[in-house]
Image (cartoon, rainbow, N blue to C red):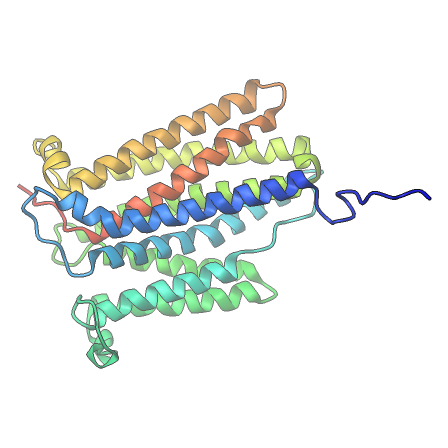
Length: 337
């Protein structure tokens, strides 16, 4: 009698595929843990020795901001890359399963948590009785917080509808609300600041979210889509170069608005905001170098899709940048000398 040994295909997945899945799951777990540690422990490290006072619950606020920014990146990246893929001749019709509904739910919870803080006078609520929901309608910050909560709710409904592309409008409302929130009316030139933040945040969300979805799409396409896969990655690389230029210009301008040129070097090391900003600049530089490495491979390597290796590292680094950005928004602004 001949014994038939079961193959890996009979189990539905090869051992190599299972190992790859475990590695990806472990990488996601490590990244999430790192994000939580940076958000929760970062404020005390940044404030150490500066003499600045920390706002109550700053670590929790940083974590909520990180979740909110991540919830923006995922659907925006999906919409943008799916539109790029539709323009490629011969591209496989397959698209990854959408993460937009989960991102909208995450963003809704994060926005709700941030709104509860605003409703208690920017203090961390310890009971439901401390939350003045009606008071949100009477303040600018409260109205912006409500816009973000409602926008993520509508974005989730749009993501589940037959026309998921319509979620671009509520997502745009969240970006606009964030730009206005970051620059109160008491600030010098608030409209200029809000405009800079609007461009900066839009470009950052597109950069991180689109790269994530490009890699997910290439993994789904047979043989990574062949020429179509390389073309998709090349299209993204050209757009990313423009996005990086816009992020750099708006980031530099925003920094000089908050830190005059003659005090920048001192405040980058003497203030919590400056220290975290310096860490963000270093991380963005690392991301830019990884993007350059991927672009060189895409153009010169025998197999252009080997550019996916540095691109994966770029996605991880961008995840850390998003976390640091969330921490930056929760820290006290530097003193304008």
